[in-house]
Every structure is written in structure tokens, then in C-alpha cells.
Amino acid sequence: MTRIHFVYPILLLLVFASCTTADINKVLQGVGGQGPLTQQEVAQGLKEALIQGISKGADQASKQDGFFGNELIRILLPEDARRVENTLRQIGLGSEVDRALLAINRGAERAAQEAKPIFINAIRQMTIQDAFNILKGEQDAATQFLRRTTERQLIELFQPRIQESLNEVGATRFYGDIANTYNNLPLTNRKIDPDLNAYVTERAIDGLFKLVASEEQNIRQNPLERTTALMRRVFAAQD
Image 1 (cartoon, rainbow, N blue to C red):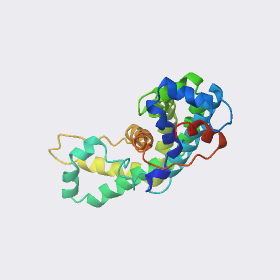
Image 2: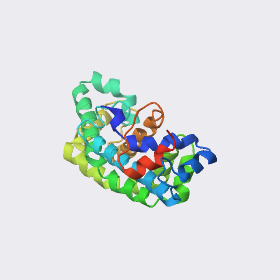
Image 3: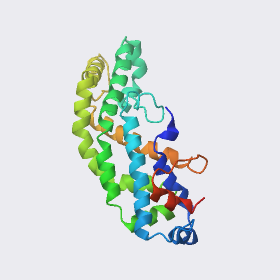
Image 4: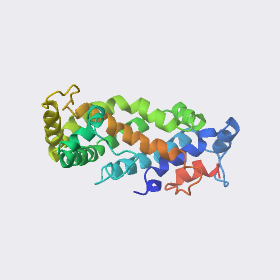
């Protein structure tokens, strides 16, 4: 999977992560003889970058292998099952484990698209102060903003959607069979929780935020496209 195409407009925003007050004043003064930018225009340019980037990220994550094919966000077995995975394979459940792993990630991929409207709604509600806090903030300021403003909503939306997706791809049944088989073994002290919903919901949301955060470090090295006139004006002052 090509990460550079994933959330690049969001990442462009993070060129400003170490901006000084003088840098921000430079943005507001405008470049190229086009006149000064208003604070509202700067905020809107940042929103455009964020919206385009999160849209691409959600689209990519929701494709087949969006989770399973990406080592950064691939969802592993829940911790209690990972602790006994070798035992599961030794008792002949290796293929069932692999099938459950694939199905879990397919469930996350099906649900990932549901994140887009939640993210976009949060971005549209960003205030001018939010925008400048991101400009002057840490290298993961955009990720922190999105997580702070969207995580509760994402959890509420994802839990029913994840359950539906896990049921559709058979993950609930496959993993439940593994858990029940193991739990019924004699002398088994550790039990596997057969409920996947809360675990996969959390991992799916973590994955979406990781896609944003991991690319923040690359922004200064990668040539990026500015796809709207306002974005070009806002970011041109940093060239």
C-alpha cells in the first residue's frame, strides 16, 4: 500500500507544526502579490486539507486489505487469544486462527468508511483558534485534535457497525468457535473471551489515527500536491 497517497493533505498541514508567530504572520500577510489572507481563510484552507486527507484515508482503509494488508494497522488476535495462539495451532486450529484473523480485518475494512462523516463533521466545526493551535502545536497536533474531538462519536458509531461487519464476514462465528473449543479443553486455566466487538472497535479506530500520525513525520520530506486555490495560498508562504 502506498502510504504517501493516504492522508497527504492532512500531512501538509503539519509543515506548520513548528511555526513561530512570525511564520504565521507571514501566512496572514499573503504571498505572490495576492494580498493578505484573513484568519478565516487560513482556517478554511486547513479545513480543506484535513477534509481531503481524511476522506482519502477512510477510502483507502475501507478497501480490501486496507487493514489486513497494512502491517501498521493490521488487527491481531485479542491479547487473551495471542497468549495461547501457539497452543491453538498445536491442537490443530491453525487454519481456523488464520481465517478468524482475516475475517476480523475484513470487518474493520467494511466499517472504516463510517469514520469519514464523523471526522469531516469535527473538522468543519474547527474554530480559528483550533486552526492556529494546530499550526503552532506539536508534530501530532492534527491527530490530537481529531482524536480529542471524534473518538467518543467514533466508538458509538463503530460498535454497532463493527458488530454487523464481523457477523457479515463470519468473524464472530470463526472466533467464537476457536474460543469455545479452547475454553472447553481440560486443565485450561486461561479463558478466551469470545466477544470481539469492543476489541475490534478500539483497534479499528486506533488504526485510522495511526494512518494520520505515522505520516506526520514524512511531511517535510515529501513533495505534496495542493489541490485548491486556497490551500495553495495558505501553504505557499511556507515554501
